[in-house]
Image (cartoon, rainbow, N blue to C red):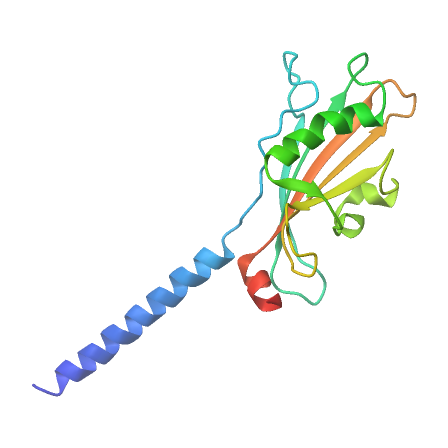
Length: 172
């Protein structure tokens, strides 16, 4: 009878260890989308909010830990927005109020619109957390603004990319 007690304690210890490891893994690997509370450029109009929202997980080739991508898109119409700078001047203060600043990012490879837009004026901009270390892997925000073919309105995309905690720990 006394021998069964140590065996039960060992089994209980192993079960608790597995439970703690499983919960820890789920907490670290759970999706962490960085959905930003930004007002769309036409938010002052009925049905003027973001027209499309997407949440996706992306994994680079030869990597295992995902990036969590959140994207929204909308239109910005004249007369309120007559050029690229008008739209950026509307979005950038909102991002700054949330703790973001223009910075070096990986928007050129993360943002699909970077394949046809230049970086900077009349294209896309990248934002990092204020004071973020550029050598560390962290969340980024990209905005892309471009006119439609007939320049009657502007297409607007905001995308945040947030690496998983496991990926950040692996790169630490």
